[in-house]
Amino acid sequence: MMLNYSYKILGFVYFLFSYFSTSILILIFNQLNIDKARPQLIRNISSHSRLAIRILGIKVNVKHFDKLHGKNFLIVSNHLSYMDIFVISSFIPTCFVTSYEMKETPFLGQVCTLGGCLFVERRSKKGIKKEINSLSHSLKKKLNVTIFPEAKSGSGEGLLKFRSPLYQAAIDSQVDVLPICINYKKMNGELVSLKNRDKLFWYGEMTFFPHFFKLMALKKIEVDLDVLCPISSTDKVILLNESFE
Image (cartoon, rainbow, N blue to C red):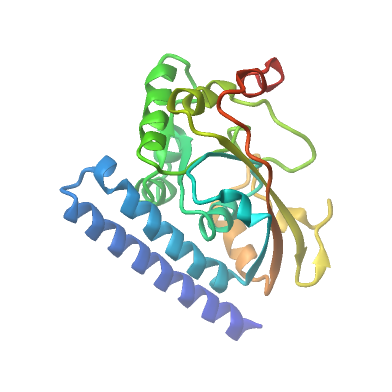
């Protein structure tokens, strides 16, 4: 058990070194221009996510992957853990939308910045038009953009309040919305339940590093990634329905 844990730690140290070094080289090659470098940063985090899920022992069962059709989308997903990033990105190269609060968080902020993330200010609505334009710009460049409408990870017991204005980016760029659903099924062969979910889910006042090191002790994690039917960007009634506000 201890040997396996040690190998995992060493493997993740290698992952971080490789991820940071290649991301920095990409930025330098693109004259430190994040917008210019974003397509390459997205491919970089996607390839490193495939490495991360192997190190963490995560088996992803992808359902209806054919619905991607080679197009780019505004992807919307439920949010349960920081592992969601690895799960999604390992199969769908995409830039993620996260908060300036995350950008200001030591270590995680640097990880997000070097992953080509787009940042929004969830504490104020003053810059919402600029943020929508930023998302639309990336979508028009044929990039996938992923948002978590609940804005933060939750326990999975129910839906949090949706941040609906960001759907405007799909309408402005005429890109369809692709809903996906993440469902953590098992860990170490045991079904995920209310009793053990906190070993996987990260929410509320949980601190990152203590949770992560406990997660590393798990040998195997099974998760379903279900790609649902795309929603046309012309269907404004669905995208901007009051139920999302």
